[in-house]
Length: 109
Image 1 (cartoon, rainbow, N blue to C red):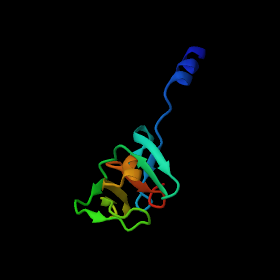
Image 2 (cartoon, one colour):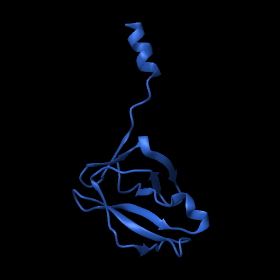
Image 3 (tube, rainbow, N blue to C red):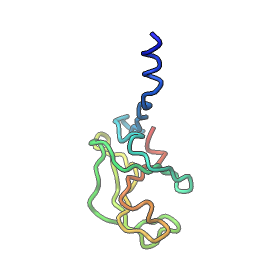
């Protein structure tokens, strides 16, 4: 019926779910989308699903241009695949990544 179609058309789109490329468990969705960083090949989300674990050990980033940045590694609790990082300490030009879930586009579908 027309009223139902109009109601659905005005509804917010369903979030798109990102899944682990290894075991296909959900790792996050577009409802917490911040941006994507094509230069570093990652998507930035404000939150992650329960199947994402954070290694509490902080490490220095080895990526070019990220000298002095401290990261914690994200991994899948289902298959232990490395999914990306959370930046805990950043240089001024990378402040926009701090405390966000940075998923590598190669590790999610």
